Length: 127
Ligand code: HEM
Image (cartoon, rainbow, N blue to C red):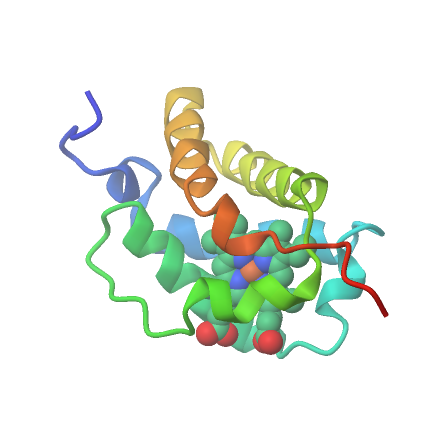
């Protein structure tokens, strides 16, 4: 079931659709008062480009991820499980807005969930 052809990347509409989904997802994230502060000093064009590569690759598209290792770039930021859930929800809403099938949204969310431990860090650090 999971190894359907065409791949998830293609079923979601390929490069053009995923580029639009990433753009839309970050518009939602940057407007979310809980998530926006994390991105205050981030180069947004670079972020969108790297996220496109990452998701395209995670969805079995013909793209190599050339960005930073996920744990190293996120773990010190204090991202908790609620932040992670909201982030994934923005992705899901953006994908639906661009016509993704619910079964494909579910599959994509399942793949994102596998990165949760790499993204979330310990928020109880003293000082
Ligand atoms: C499955 C979920 C996530 C994935 C796949 C993901 C992926 C990525 C990728 C690919 C980058 C770019 C790396 C690079 O520049 O080389 C990035 C950067 C970043 N992400 Fe995430 N991310 C996720 C969740 C989150 C969450 C929940 C937050 C915060 C609430 C977050 C905050 C950031 C920030 C602030 C940066 C920029 C870091 C910097 O430039 O120093 N990410 N993420």
